[in-house]
Image 1: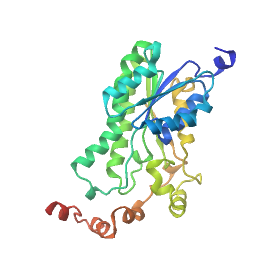
Image 2: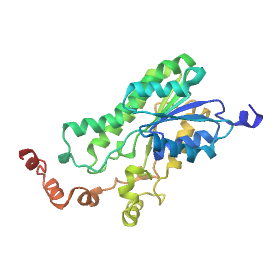
Image 3: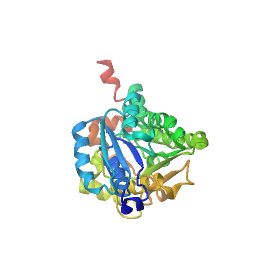
Image 4: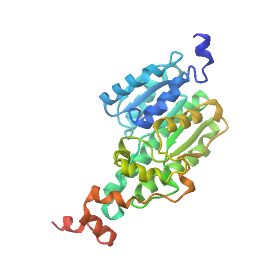
Length: 293
């Protein structure tokens, strides 16, 4: 290893990033690679993983490598397999970043039992499995850092996002409770609460200049988030600078939590149609007719 590589703060470290081909996953990987940390990206689509690696390779410094694992962060065996690839001879990763999650704007009256459980699984189960399968290796190796991706919705639930807000509040709670339980192993667990950040799931905001300008007006710093903003926070929580930080949920949201949450009523009609939205706002069950049929 060269002297320049040894000077990098994360030289020789390794990280697993679930949802690694996504915007926040790639942004996190970029920040880690620049400081010498090798990364393993877990995602379902091999083609998306290959594209992510091509974008990220020029950023790797100090001999840091990029490995790819095609798999599902909601399947424990896939998470374990990815950890095996990422751990190498050390037998554990130093960092795990659980970015899998998401939602769409969906009123309670358009949810049913299955859709609720699916959304909870996507956001909470994916975080749990990352923590669960990191524990043995990190404990044996003397510690590590786990970073979960929450949302500003965890503390500022916007209208029409009740289940997502519930799920992300659970992610914040999981970070705190896990940090308490795992501190004995020197495993740190923290979460990041992004504001609206450019990603595939936020295209309904970023895709329209009018909607983007409307959303931006709610952020005191005058812009929406970019994956690099979240990646920088991940890098802090992954590195030695945060060695005395655990059980925290860090807001990275341009000051969004200084103001009231966004009202997304304006995006409902394009998603569900005027008639359905009118029934929802009136408190009527828009699914009743389809169930009767």
